[in-house]
Amino acid sequence: MFIYNLPFAIIHSTTISTINIYITTIDNLRYIAGMGRVIRAQRKGAGSIFRSHTVGRKGAAKLRVFDFAERHGYVRGIVKDIVHDPGRGAPLAKVVFRDPYKYKLRTETFIATEGMYTGQFIYAGKKATLNIGNVMPLASVPEGTVVCNVEEKVGDRGSIARASGNYVTIIGHGDDGKTRIRLPSGSKKIIPSTSRAVIGIVAGGGRIDKPLLKAGRAFHKYRVKRNSWPKTRGVAMNPVDHPHGGGNHQHIGKASTMARDSPAGQKVGLIAARRTGLLRGTKKIKDA
Image 1 (spheres, rainbow, N blue to C red):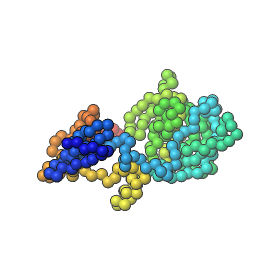
Image 2 (image 1 turned 90 degrees about the horizontal axis):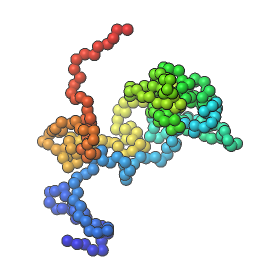
Image 3 (image 1 turned 90 degrees about the vertical axis):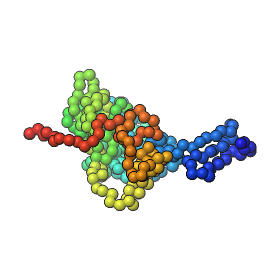
Image 4 (image 1 turned 180 degrees about the vertical axis):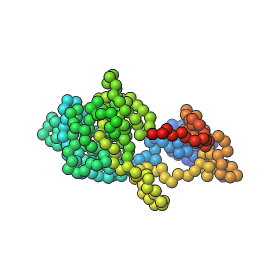
């Protein structure tokens, strides 16, 4: 069967079946059999209605560019405003610095820390003081200090502990120019001591402790983020739509553990689980 002079034609099957035959004349005629819908795990990346809603956002929140002034001394800025960024839980601070090379002012967008206020002076550099909101290299920060918006690589302008209420704890400094930190997840990481960080905790902590209580609030929360709500359970779907779908009652019907390197169409359930089942036994607590 050939169709000429048609850029695109669709023939739907009239039987109780999931197969649709798409006939396209782009380049040459091809027959494509549809194999069901694309599950959530396969929608990640660039897409039509699944990309982020970035209209109205206040721009990327980054530290200053790592220049000569910060490497050897410090620069001073002032917090002009604290603003809300749609789609982000933490507030942002508009900090104005003098340009070290030209006669002009530069406005930087920082992630606001707890205790920051408008009119506050922000010092950034190697010789800055240890105060809330200041930007310092980790080598100048004492052990046990809590910091946020930490650079993983020197000069990347902040990539660790940026969500509301998050912080990183300085564990120790090595003689080899490396610093050991404890991440918000509890895991430990070694990064260069010349990486910069903001002193303090990201503002907006405790946001997830207050329940949303109703669907309308969840709707408005995700409306400014991305098309990821509401989420339909896989067991409530048909087998053509999800690996957990189908059956005479809502059950997975097989082990829900899945390998880490599974393809996106299979990667649902307990991905690369170390263990499954209920936690048994009691947890021993050391006496103080």
